[in-house]
Amino acid sequence: AVGVQFETPPLANAATGVCMINVTPDGQRTMCTFLGAANQLEVDDIDADLIGASAIVYLEGYLFDQPQAKAAFRQAVSLASKAGRTVALTLSDGFCVDRHRAEFLDLIRSGVGILFANAGGSFHMGPFPEADADAIRATVDVNLVGTMLSIKHAVPAMRANGGGSMSQVAEGA
Image 1: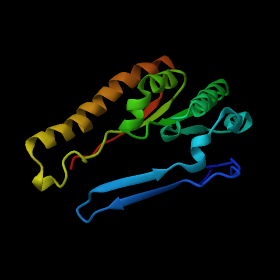
Image 2: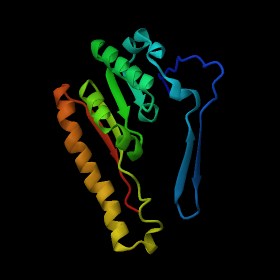
Image 3: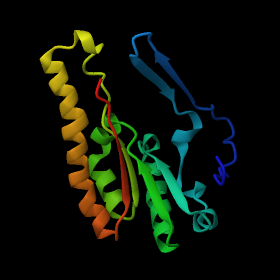
């Protein structure tokens, strides 16, 4: 993309990540991801000059599992905040949120200005014509109620940081 820089040199003796997405003819999908070297992010990888020169610093929630990566995220948010830069964070998926809910909230409160959160998709239902009422209710709960609850909980943290933006993505069927 125009204006996007990725300055991180390759990590020696580490595999490249890969993501395979399989979509069936009826629109069902599954994703298999191997993060490779990306899950070895650490504080030493954070470039203060690059963050200071950036308009937006983007943090990918899938990388948040390792303790050293959490420290790197916190360092990036701190540097961006001091430099007056915007931080964007994607929560990636519900499993990431389940594992890191309190830590994500702390990170958001510490200076995230743009939050991306996917509501969960329609994987609860299967093909819509065969969905029963309980499956439809579960999907509505994830996509509508889940979206509203995430806004309810994120907005106070964003207000405390002087504002921000949020993108919610949901599916109906």
